[in-house]
Image (cartoon, rainbow, N blue to C red; front, side, top):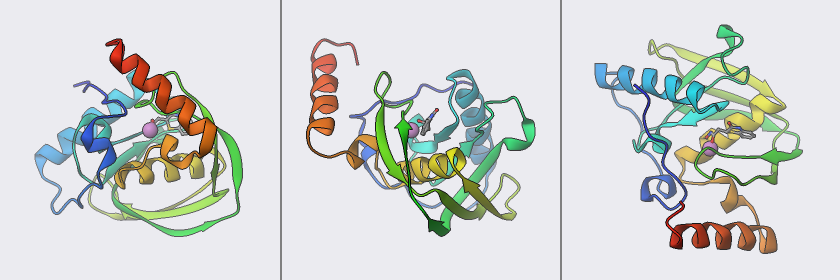
Length: 169
Ligand code: GNR
Ligand code: NI
């Protein structure tokens, strides 16, 4: 089932999510729905808070379905290592229509449970490292616009407020 993706301003997107304490059938259904929702969007990642669920789960596939082996599910993920720095344009399904250059680690290693409850450790570089950092931010209630400063941030936040007032957000 495709679930609606919430937008900047929804409380759950701005609040840290809780760890999952058991992989129940409801959690498995949520994960399957997140994967389907990510592919339909389409996006390279999706975090549970984006579909209104305040739990520490994200899915990612930087091939957007072209390579089934690239699909990753992380439950209760944490960073093991992060290093380097990359500056690239970034977007978010919860902030549609906006992009900005965000500093991210060039390399990130994430540890967490997979869909079967088995511990996995995955290293990402480049786009995958960026995606990991972006999704981990969602689990902490942070959107990419929160990482911007000054005029860049003000401009996007003002445009979102304007869209909101016009009922177009
Ligand atoms: O689809 C997405 N593309 C993207 C591009 C650059 C950096 C991060 C991302 S993640 C985003 C999907 C999304 O909003 N995930 O939370
Ligand atoms: Ni996002």
